[in-house]
Each structure stands twice: as structure tokens, then as C-alpha cells.
Length: 603
Image (cartoon, rainbow, N blue to C red):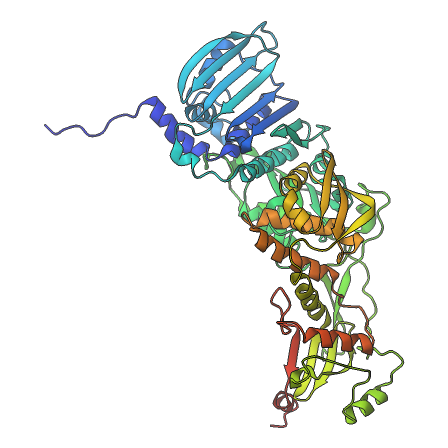
């Protein structure tokens, strides 16, 4: 008789294995506990964490609570009040239904549950350490439920060592609570991290108010309402005008039947609705809620219920695409419900000429405010001069003399002796060299000059003290990041103080940055900190100098006179890398005599 090698795992080991699927990080614990609180009919939920949730998590709600027997059953695997039979899986209306969250969490942490029904005089207290029941008794507490989770993964060190830093884990928790708060705007949420309030929503039931509480009230004028109802699919929510961008999808939230989900299909539909309105590396803010028949969705495909399957993805894709496209193309007078004083939006137009019919074609380009206004009349390219005629320019070139006094420390190099001819479309400088024709992108060239000038400074960036302090509103998460990276902001020239839960006071700023750009620069630094994985001080300084140079450089559309053009060319050739901007784009395009001959078919 052969020896038996297959055996049943004990319950504790099975729970630890299940925890690996359900509880991958502290944010997953918070998500599961908050979803349970939502299913319990709560109107107020408070989440408190310490060290990114690795040391301590507490979720308190004012839901209906549980009795003694139910509390003991709730911490056992596959015990749930959400479903009874397999048929119920076809029409799930709650966020939770597996009955795995609480036992999985209790298996890898020091877990306590305190819960009380409104009809009970006393609450029930349950304590579990690493999956082993330590205490179960009556206790005094208010109505609702409080769950605490301490020393997460204390008995599974392999899982604990793969966690990120506490600030990174805090960011994941913030993101999870943020999305849950937007999916249930009728619930008041509070998130406290290391004894600091980082997120608070009013629970007014209005989605726009929840968005304002989370992302700041300044985003509200940039939002467009979305309303769509067709073929049993309802799409509602808000999308941002193309000027409000992030470098990732962090500001995009998709909810299906009040469940926050990840869906590439929905994200693709959103991208295509914004097609041609955004740069390649930009993602708009979007909070979209889809209501679809329960039988057309399967939420039982992922342990954490983040991903779902749809019976007709193409139908949903078309619905989201049409809903967002309609909002983006709606007349301006229909988009002022959130801000009655909002001015009429405008859009820049890229005008293309040279078609066989001689017609001009306009392509929408992201502008400063927003969207669909009549294009500016087309104007031909002009030479930008300052009381200097083209005849004088030509005569000066024939005499091989510059138009104005011109000096360059590197004039021994033939390529440095550029004689400016003029400007095209207030964007490109045309110059003649001894070896051909040069076209210079004025913004990219000035960007290179400013970057080299800033990078030569050692230590802290030169600063200016503000006579009148400036106050800026940020999200609580951004305020937390500013406080956490205070030394980094100081080295970059910004002295900031927190004066409220979501308000920062600016006392000093870099001398090369206009005051009007201070807030935008700060937000971009925060974005860099969020996008770069634990950036070093040198990496962050390099990224900041790129950004500061880009912000301060002359822009396309700014007219320059000949003296300004000469000064720009002279300083450009004193830089170390005059042929590219700090982002790697070319600053100069050269056409030699052979190139010109080929273009005119002389060869």
C-alpha cells in the first residue's frame, strides 16, 4: 500500500494563503474594511493609519453593526451576509460577498473587532492574533463597528519585506479612500495619517462636492458634467477640460454600479473621446459612474474585486465614448452650471495651408482655458523687425556685417557666426551662417540657455523673499507630501508653511520664476515626486531645472526684434549643448548648400 502524501491544510495555514490573494498591502486592508462599512449602511467612515498602515489601521463606521453570534461568525472563512446561494452571484448589489476579507486580515495581523447593534445594550469585542482567537466578550461601545489591525504581516515576514516605504503605502491608502469617497458621495469620509487629517469629505451626496473636497475647489470651474442614458446604460459624472492634466491615470476613477473598478476598455474609451485635444503624455481628470443591468457584469473574477467582466464590452465602450464626447463638444452655455461666472472658453488653432484648393484647415490644439471657439484669422509669416527694412538686412548681409554690435566669445567657430534674418510665425528664428541656412526654435534655445544658467548655481537655488506671502490650496495628500519633502522644496528655492488642513503659505521662491507661475511650478514638483519612484535629490533637481527653464523661457508667439535675436543666438552658443534643449528636442536645424540644392532640384 502506497504512502499517503496528500493532506488537508489546517485552517490557519489556509487563511494565510488566502490572505496572500486578498491582502497584498495595507491599502487592500483599508479597502476591504471600508467596503464592509459601506455595505453596513454607514453615513460616516473614519480611517486612521500609522506608518502607512504597516503598524496600525483603524476603521470606524456608524453602520448597523452586528450581534454577538454574527461577530464570531464574521471572522470565519466564507461567512457572509451578502449572498446565500450560487444564483445570487449573478446579481450582486453589495461591494463584498466572498466572506474572506476579515479572516484573511486576522490571519496576518493582530486584529480586533468591536461592534454593536442599535437594539443591543452592549457591544461585542473579538480579538484575534495571527488567526488564533484570543478573546471574545461583551464590551461598552457606541452603535456601529470599529476594526483595528496592528503589526500587519508580523507572522509572514516574506510578505512584509516586499512593502514599500510608509509614505508610499500611505499614498496607496489615500488613493483607495479617495476613490471610495467619490463612489459614495453621500458618506462623510475622514482619513487620518500619523495624527494628521489628510482627507475629509462632507458627505453631501453631490459628486461635484466630493471632487472639490478631494482635489480642491479650484478644479470645479474646469469640470464638465457628463450625462448619458441609452440602451439601459447610464453614464454620469464629470470630466475635465483638456487643460487639467496629469502624467498618469491617478485622477481617473471609473465606477460600475457604485463599485470602483480598473478597466482598460473604459480608459481607452476616455482616451479616444479626448483624441487630438491632449498631448501624448497627458491624462485628464475624470470621475465617471456607470449604471448597468446587474446580469451584464461579473464581479467574481478577481480576489480583490478590482477587475470585472462585461457581457458586451463594445456597447459600454460606445456609451462612454459618446457620453464624454458629447460633454466636450457641448455648447459653452450648457457648461456653466457649476460656475455661473465662467468666461467663454477658447481654443488655439493650428492652421494648415498649401492644399491644392488653397483652403485652410484648422485642427484643435490644447489652449490656455478650453475649448471650441472660432479660429483666429490666418496671417502670413512676417519678418519681425524693429525699424529695420528687409532691404537693410540684405545690404548688411552683402557687406558681411551684422546689423548691430555683435560679440561672441566662440566666434572662431564658423557655426557661431550667425547673422539673423528674421522670425517666422513669432516662433522660429532664421539666420545665415557661413556654411548654410539655420532655423532656430526660439523657445527651445532660450530653454537651453536658462537651464545651463540655473544648473551652474551650487547649493540652494537663488531665492527672493516675498513682501506679501502667497496662500495656495492643495489636496490634503499634497500638503502631506510638501511637509514630508520640506527640505527638498527648500533646496529648490521654496519656503512653505502649512497653515490649514489644505492650505500652504509661500514665503520665498526662486528668483527666476514669475510669481504668477509659482503655484503651477509647485504642483508640477508634487507631480514629479509622485511619478518618480523615490527620486534622489539630484534627479529631482534636474527635473525641476528642466521645468523651471521651460516655464521661464520665451514662448512661441512672442515677437523678437533683431537685437533680441542676436543676443539669444550669441548666448546659445556659449552653452555646453546648444543643439538640444534640456528635454532632448533639437534647438537648431541646419540646411547646408547641398541640402538647399537638392530642395530646389539643382543636383
